[in-house]
Length: 230
Image (cartoon, rainbow, N blue to C red; front, side, top):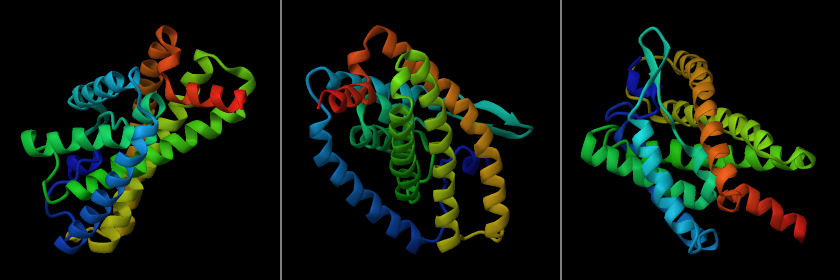
């Protein structure tokens, strides 16, 4: 199993051309919708933060951390982006990072760009954000940076595992390799559960650091306060 799969950056040829094109169309349509909805999340304060989030995720994704012998992972950033700048803006940030990495650094295949965006920018962001919002509501009486850190950790872990399952679905639809779907699913779930722990730690530390200095810039906190005020 290639390390590129473990790190969630699919290379060219892992799924067939028909599947790559189909998910490319899905990614373009979804990002177009995100671009329309992101206008509701952005203002003069958060536009610079969105740029910083994209730059931070791009930089941190270049650093791999060991998981198992021969297996390494890196930050996906979906939950981190969603918690800080919102799900629609977060999806756009991750997508921009993936496009730059693919075209300029050959990190992830060009033909696999649609599948990579679907997995990391759409599934990872959406599931990470949904988990964060649900937990934050559940723990609403314990607001604070420690609670936010716990929420961020769990959201990042869930988002990472769900993003890996996106690959399993794509491979089941049009996998071009001979490895069975069951073997791919077991391998990815196991490794990404471990990668998700590293993702969770990085996400929790980053989000709490921002919250201590500028809590007004953390999207889930602003959203929660708006709901309470209403």
